[in-house]
Length: 452
Image (tube, rainbow, N blue to C red):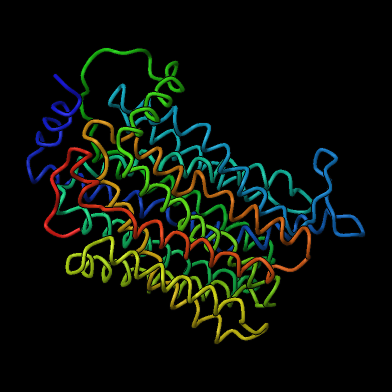
């Protein structure tokens, strides 16, 4: 039996009620891990790790890990880039293992709980322990990336082609809902830390650790409801052949040049998205001089509006197609970043306005990119191709944070780096517009939806 026939049989094996149950479980991994992306990566760990690194810095503001002089303000950006490099090394192994064995769920569990444990370990980030914080951040961020590659690979199995835009958008909406809920609790704890008998530092550390506990607790839901599909027997051991499988995957992807063209476009514009997500709090606190409470409230606003944005852009995709809707969102992203360059320091109102605009396009652009790519994956190669997608999503999004860190290293100003992100969205727009997606879907061997 061919890989395509095996995949078709697996996809059709579940009754509709079983598939609905799986979908609900699938949504809950977004619900579980999105708290890390919001509370940890976007809000707390950037400014807090930067403050810890500054406490360890010399009189000139430099720290010296392994004897290398780094500005303390660049440590967080470099740690994010290092986590991405680690994820790039691990994801091909995980994707190959999942496709060869059909056992995505145990691998998802390992990645999720390693990331959750590292996140919970950030409770011990204090004093001048910036190297501990950087190491835990690298492990947590890489684990999230690997787990998302495995998680996304379930999408073609739990949703028919015409359903994927809506299912993917609901997943993102679940994630943004949990992020908003936990941020409200974090805001209560942080602003009222004195009434709870806590220092500001202790409150931040509890917020960081609780995100890891949330991630671990709610991961139980998808692990109970998702099910692995059998694959055709044969082949080498999955882990031992991981890199050989990667080379085979890359050779196979050359047979689908339009799928590669989409991945290139996505790599470029998503690098801008991921850099905004990871560096926004540092930009707001260090360059704009905003209070931590303002940053939490702004990200909370993003979370609330991102739910509506993800669902609303899902509806737009049904009317105009996913490609056109994504292109529209990229134009809005470019305008947002251009406006962000001119934001005055110490002006929370304008920062809130920018956060609102980001929220309206953030969830939709990510959800529709995921669902659009699912149409471009050859049947039976979901985990391998989604590992490549995740490399483009988080795995190869090291360039933006690295440029951001280098800009600060050279100039000492975060504002000088922000305008460069517009280039990512503009170039991504051009590359995506050149992809004939209907032809790409057909060449991947999938049915072409009426509107895409």
